[in-house]
Length: 59
Length: 465
Image 1 (cartoon, each protein chain N blue to C red):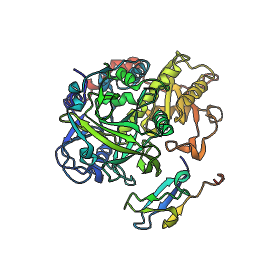
Image 2: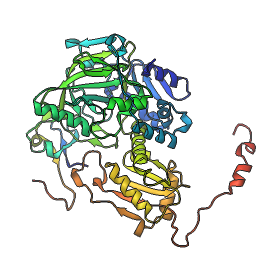
Image 3: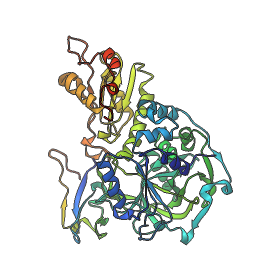
Image 4: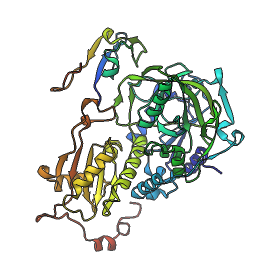
């Protein structure tokens, strides 16, 4: 699958995932599917954008 | 009389187990439809389900019934293409393959003769929140319309493809998740001109219309003509309410949503539980501004239970047919092809061959994997292995395959950027599971055919068993 990152909503703490290329560093606000809160990735309660072992890091 | 959804539903209603009608109100936008469908799946029951009294996303009774799970059996898909349901397996795939090779030119009828123009909501009345919209899976961002869309290229070619349209609680402004090659190309054409792109969401039509819309033709092929081959008659078109004869729409649809994609305007959509039982990641996709909703009297809204049997057959039929058309010219000994439910009808194909020749299984696998880009596994078996019986295919793999020589990677794995619909990072594998012929190898045990024909189970079991 495409590279993704998991985001944890700062309001309801629901976890969902997003397209890394389009949303991780674009400044676009994410949309929590559980409580409809909009937030930028940096405001997430937690993020997980680990790559699998051995995969090249994106710039 | 032209084929339509109403007649089809009436026809399958007379077949035991093929249609369940539910009168009790349900909230499709609150997972109630998919919760019921999942429970039917868990019981290995796959009827089409007609919800007579769904609520709309604002919890109001909708005037439209909701029809779903229509494609969940190959028997019903056979009926859609005019076949006896007993011919649900390879004969159905061949019928689909034959339809792929044909074109039937559409005909144009006046709006007054078009059922889909019997009723119209336009302007401020074009309120999509009055339509029942299913929210399918726990992580889905919003209630989602899952049927086909029509766009027209600047050179006048109509493309019809499945795409998802998300209802983000704004009845005039949807987001359409376009992933297909051809719809994406049309959107780009208009974006480059800085013009809004007309788009139509067909959320109810005879099911052969939707079966035909998953055809895979080269760019330049008119999908209205392609779909006519699946309908078995010319598709009737009529001028749209919003653009007149500059954009023709299916005249016999139950309900269509006319809208525009403004240039450059995108918004968040997804996650959505896709055909692979994986969620599509949240992303940015074009905005769909609703202009009009037209529908026939008594219209039904259709939906797909994505990632379950309802989408498996849709994916499988197209793959099986495309591979038949690609392989048959080079391999006259090709027997049957099946894209199994275990790979969602998308990622794997089991291909049986008569009298396979040395190296032939690998050549068939390579062509199959190159022909269907999304396909990741091809298993080639002998013709005495039933490709529709996965246990037999797995038996052949376990028994006949040489791991050292019969399992090969094809090309390089596509990696992390290979797209939402790819699992296993896009790695492609072909497995030769035909019985070895180049050295002394065992034979599968069989009850003698003569005895199987002479001794009939029904003659020996106690009555009622």
